Image (cartoon, rainbow, N blue to C red; front, side):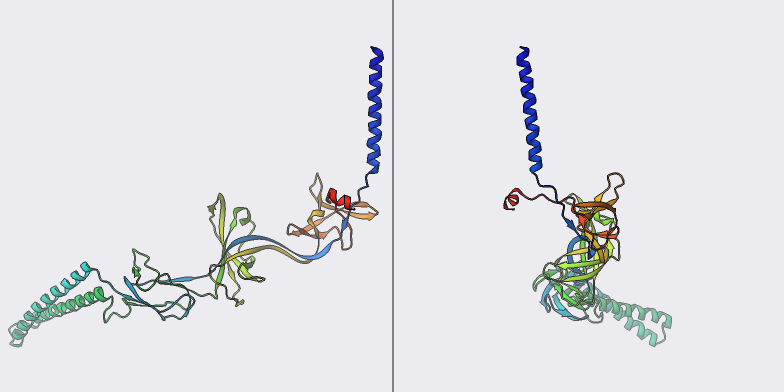
Length: 373
């Protein structure tokens, strides 16, 4: 029995020894690791975050009627340029039957009162001319007559306003002709001839007849995520790109960041606005989708390296690279870094132009590429 155990142990030792020799042989057949190197270069590095949104006019003016009725004629269409006071539309008043009857009854009542005051005035005037009544009594009668005359005139005007929407003597306070209140471009005409419109008053916004805006004063309106809003501040420069306008960007300045976020699809979004440079005369249609790159930091024509070349000390977390000193020989070189765009990073100190930096995390070639080589 002891003889078989001894033979088994010797066989295991022999197999282990042969396996170790084979492993060492295969290890010696592998090519030694040859590290590639890259050199620092000059580049402008921009650190930015992107917001999505659209281009809209800085101010839009909604033209609303001050009387209710039906659109009789429209004199403008979207895209037209208008000046302040230009005619936009004409409204035909469709009076309310109840209001019209009440106004008509008020005219009749005022007429009866006027006739009665006229008769009394004539009688008192005859007595005054004969010296029967005093001047003071006659003055009271005359005032009552003139008040009745004025009430009758007011009732007639009110009846005309209810029936037609306007009357003589009140200027533009109630008018069936709707005019532009500002100069600009017509962006939208949401009504057509024949549509009924409601007047703008304290209880109702009224029907919008046209939307006007100065298209030479446009802004970018977008939203940023809560993770980015802490990095931005007002007066930062923006680079706005419009999807419908290829190969062109527009300069803008961030001038508004919403103090309160709004939840959208489970994330908190903050509204931002940036005014586009007025010197650029390119026509941008209102409502076009756009992206704005918010420039957080910028370093022009600085010495830079790829961020993938940077390593970090396990204890201090300070950045460093390995610089070649000889054939596949490298030494550690601590760095002071500046602006990074996520791909390239500015090097303030630590390396100079011409240094060969070790690519420490280079990718191994795919098996098919090894076969080809």
